Amino acid sequence: MPTKTKRALAKAQKAPQTKGASLAAVIKAELSKPVVPGETIFGTGDVEAFKGRATKELTVSNVGDRPIQVGSQAELGFSGKGGAR
Image 1 (cartoon, rainbow, N blue to C red):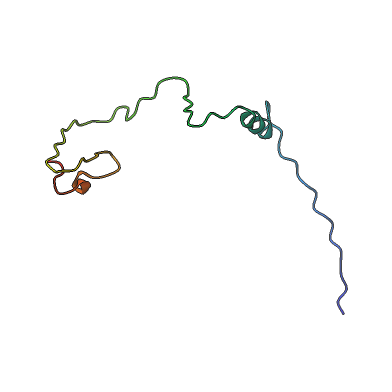
Image 2: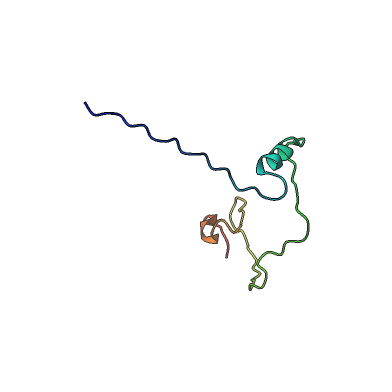
């Protein structure tokens, strides 16, 4: 029968210490804040969407019997038979 050999246990390596609060402390602080259902929390400063990109303005007409909703997530061709012209 083969003999069993013992291996030395690997030493646990500690994560490098960073200056400031640890991630656990930051998470604990965030979770301790009160939660307001539906609340929107805004960051500071302005956000400029599509900075430096060309934009186009278009008019959408609906000749159908149902309302349509046009957005960037759906192409105009999918708005139905009475869709955009």
